[in-house]
Length: 185
Ligand code: FNR
Image (cartoon, rainbow, N blue to C red; front, side, top):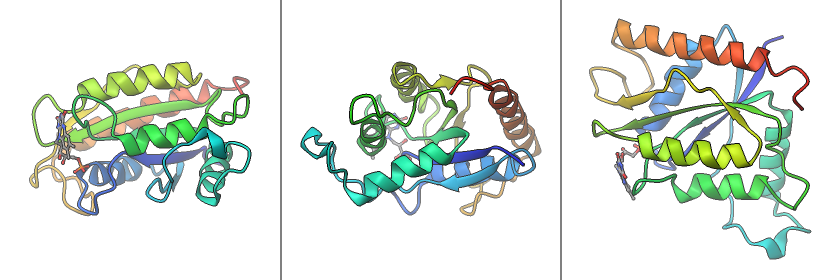
């Protein structure tokens, strides 16, 4: 069976271009992986006072990550860093101390923006956080996407063949990384 990838989108917006990109990546990797989308919208703000009695939304998040073989993060950059909603999900999954669900996972990181430089700084911040959480990230290829309607439709359909090849290569390289994870967890 194909490895299962839990997909995180760093934007909560219904019109998110990062959600578009996540759909295109799932389509590009459909023969290599199965996917489950993680909903981070309903997580409360992290509070360590709740560590011993985790809210139901947090329990669902942790169970979904535990079941996944690997993780895919597709995120915008907010003020040169990771959106707080995504950092919040990472913080919840790391607690209580000693019960982190991230440890040993493999992950890929990608991002979409409307500007040319978009998401490079956020992705670097995200990789640093993931390193601390003992998550190995795919080093290359990096994927910084400036989304236009000519590249990617609202439903995640890719209109440019070069871009389609880029996404397929990204997912293929990710599958090689995931296959190398044997015994890490
Ligand atoms: C942004 N945006 C942005 N873009 C960027 O390239 N670097 C940045 O630091 C920021 N900062 C930032 C902060 C906040 C609060 C918002 C709302 C937006 C623009 C951002 O790339 C753009 O809004 C994307 O469309 C957001 O991605 P989604 O929500 O469409 O997936």
